[in-house]
Every structure is written in structure tokens, then in C-alpha cells.
Image 1 (cartoon, one colour):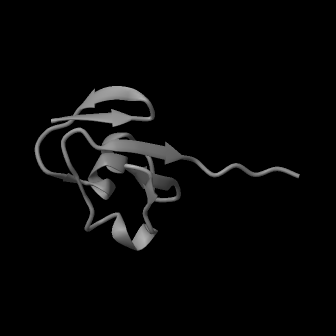
Image 2 (tube, rainbow, N blue to C red):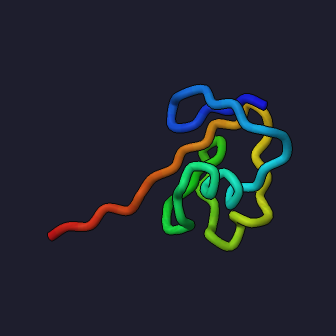
Length: 65
């Protein structure tokens, strides 16, 4: 299936959750995830499935001072 991940087309295999996507990208759960403009809660990562043509944005937290 094809999605748009951070503005670029990406091919995924079959049925995958947000947690599965993050794992395949080598990322942990400490990121902000938006699907089609809606921010997900971390509690939703394991149960939210990515659908074909979804627009997914992943942001890593920034820190500084």
C-alpha cells in the first residue's frame, strides 16, 4: 500500500499499525504522529491502523534552552 510519509511517497506491506510503522522506521514511541491532519495520542498508536493513501507526519520532540 502507498502512503505519504512526511511529504514523500512510501510503500508499506499490508495491514500495519502506527506502532508497527514506527518500529519499521527504527523510531520509538516518543514522537508526535499526525494522520490526515489529526494528532494521535500515544495510547492510540497500537490500535490505529494506517490506510492506503493516508498522509502521515512524524515529528521528533525538540529541546533546548
